[in-house]
Image (cartoon, rainbow, N blue to C red; front, top):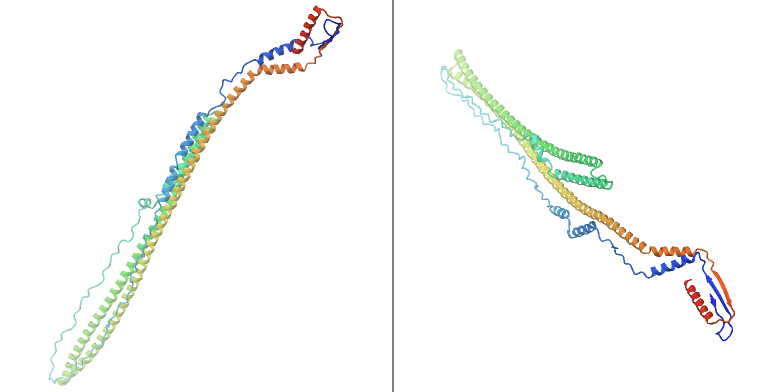
Length: 503
């Protein structure tokens, strides 16, 4: 720092000069710092030539295209199939109408069987005819031949045993295999998902196609095969057991109907045989009555002849003998008439018993007809219930199939969205990595561009931290300067100003 006091050359002048200098050991460093700072300050703008923003990766572009296609695809086909399957339900129409019960038993009308006959007295005293002459008797008994009205019936074949192997298949539910196929398809889909997960895990661990992955995939396929066999076995066993139960019910129903028909036939044959036996006993009783009547007539004739012979022997008149014979014949005729009436009464009682037995057989036959009608109605009702059960099973299967299709559609959507999200995540990772690389490149560019400035800043800080004590020199001049001195003073003043401007 310099101070000047005094006037021109007209009078004496006193001059005091104070000079401050940096130490020599630091002055070169400050000078170089100023030079480098000036050089850096006049540098032009240096633009960055690299890419600052990473564009979407191919995976992200593909996931966006898949999302757009998935949104424009509309309702999944599985949902449409489920709606179609659910809308195909048809209302159940009952095929059962109650039949008309048979009339059953109607009581018959029994007519009078026995009427008492009128007895004509056959004895009148005849004219006396002397002597005895043997009479000629014509027998009135002619044995008849009875034609039997009973012929054994033939029972119809009412029970046809079902062949087990040929008929078990027609009772098996046609929907069981569809349910089994759905379960097998779901198991295969789950196995495919598991196989993809194993492949993804092997890819993440760097072991894709390796021994460990091959063992896991082989174990998965073996488990899938075993699960398929188990599902098919359970489905076939369930269908077989259901069909076996239905076959046993139908066989039991057929055997019951056959047993009922055989019982009805047996009772009918028993009634016919009983009626035939009663008719045979009535015929035998009638024949016995006729034979007894003929025997009594023969006995009467023999007695008359014997009486006449005896009367003739005893000297009785022919008239007396004939009257005695006629009286004896009349007695025998009365006895024969009484026996004939008793036989007719007995025959009438037997006919009444036969009528009662026939009515009882008709009652049993009517009861059997009603039982058969009830059995047929029960069989038709059971068939109707079986149809309703099959309809319910079909409805439940269609409902389960619709729900399964709906679940498949939902699973397909979820699977597609998850794959799209996974692909988008991979693309986002790729883009983030490229963006990080670009950011690192730009940061490197900024560090390289500002490296010299940071170096100058660090160097300036280091110099500011160095303790520096400037040297100060004060000079005083009292003589009047001459022209040369004035010029030298001006030079010194300029040098001090220059040094002051530099620091």
